[in-house]
Amino acid sequence: MTRFPKHNDLLPRLRRIEGQVRGITRMVEERRYCIDVIQQLTAARKALDQVSLKIMNGHINTCVSDAIRRQDGTKKIEELMQTINRFVK
Image (tube, rainbow, N blue to C red; front, side, top):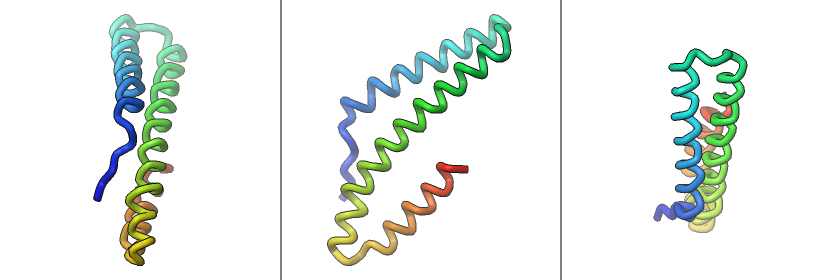
């Protein structure tokens, strides 16, 4: 059973990030100073990372822990580790 973190917390964050990305697009279109663009890209990436971590935390506390309680956690843990490996690269 998949239970997603509260979307009413995630959606405002994602909308804010969406606005950041639109702002970055405008900066590039306006040929703004490279370092300013990079700083905004870094902020957007960090914000996305925070959303990813929030979702991952919810997954661990629901799907993975439920699978472990059912003594069927090996597959979920392997899936989680693959996801973490992709996340940190």
